[in-house]
Length: 369
Image (cartoon, rainbow, N blue to C red; front, side, top):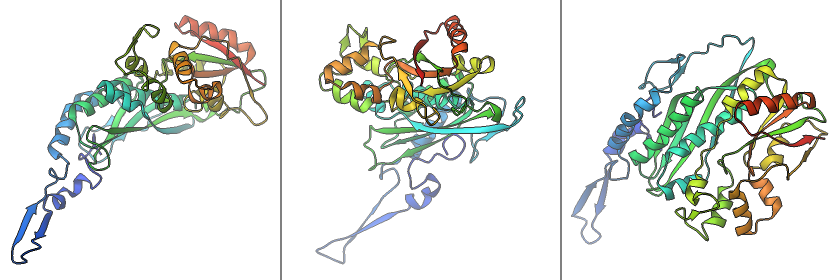
């Protein structure tokens, strides 16, 4: 582990560094077997810097500790992260976990040389996933893999994760840093994260409460979030660069694409305690229909009014520039709707008013049929 143990910067494992550092390569001359040349191959020469890994851990300590809640036990240095399982107010607490990544949005971050936003994306994406089950986050763990550890880049990613963890009341309790030359190019990295949350068993949202006639209330996204970037890059970067300024967008293309995947926790969590919410859907890959159908009971379907909201400009540019079929747009992107609440007809108006009081701009986008 990175944050609560020795830094593992290569998949050969830092805990086996001794054998790696003492490795020697013997080369015999093809012309004279009497002459032998020995070249010492160190871990550093193989492309893995233990010193940089240790510097990285020192760099992120303050940010990581800033996420610790009262239930985090111990400090950085152990082989595992400890979290005290106290669930006051829960009659039958159920742990809910999820794992995800950021996809090829990472390539945009590299092109922009801006890396803190993808750390926030990762945490918020995972928070939204378990929120859709009715759960609140407890702690988070990350995996960062790269061809060559660049401390400034990795630290920016973790700082972004720490920021999102603080905002969501979630402890960044552990992580793994893997430096893998040969697997990734020197300037490439990949990112994944795991979240664990809790929900009372009686409050689990799994779609069983959804009925015919229920209303779909959509909450706005902040852009593509973390899905559809392979299609977006294929369309947009063929014509423009990330530095291209767009009057339509009011910013550069790169800034629009790196808009942080928002967390819906602070908006939605209070509603679960006050209103009979029948279901929640986090709109990621698969779009509005694909994700919401995951919680709709057998025999039911969705009727979406695709004209019920104005799509953000970025989606219009994408569709127009790439001549992307409407079906592909609907299945690939969130189209401006990042999260959906499924509520009964009698509750819908009250929920909408409450959301507007919180400064949200909710949209009635369809119903269950």
